[in-house]
Length: 248
Image 1 (tube, rainbow, N blue to C red):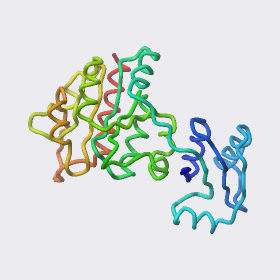
Image 2: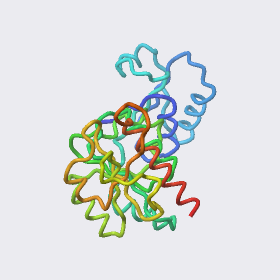
Image 3: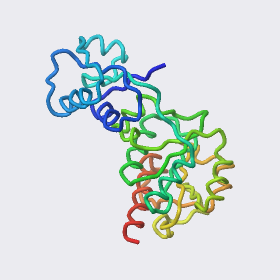
Image 4: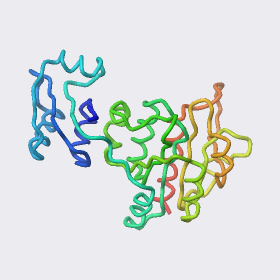
């Protein structure tokens, strides 16, 4: 079944990435085709995607009143890759691997935010489980502002086994967890081949996932609330890991 992407940033980045099969671009009739929307229509024309102007109410109906911003794109499924593709990308860039692993994070907004940060800092690949987690749905694409269209995403059946696989490839696995055994994130050398692992909202890392990590890091906190949102915490550590590498 084809995906129906929506939102101007999501649609534009899908067209820019050109990684999917495109069927049709739907544009709200009467919308001013300037700015980002104008760029979308131009991109569609360049790669031969048919453009159809339809009543905005029809877009509302098809997208269940999602914030589509007057545009939607009918396209093929998300192009998942293998883990080896991510490790190869790191080699091609002559960089130590930087991977992100999401341990059953279910909220599309959290996943989208993390994927947007991952793309910004140049992550070589993102690993997600095939069950009990948010897939790369149109909602996730929209939440990532289309960043996921430029990322390499791997779906695996067993996170614990995948951790062992990346470790065998010489990549350290670091869990982000508010745990008494964890070290403060900016007091640890993260300028190394690295997979950052983030746990599910509320529950944190699964036991087997935590046990297989090489070590854990945490964010120090001063306020009165118990913890940071997983997307915020993950974005902070991802950005820090990237900056350490740049300085190194």
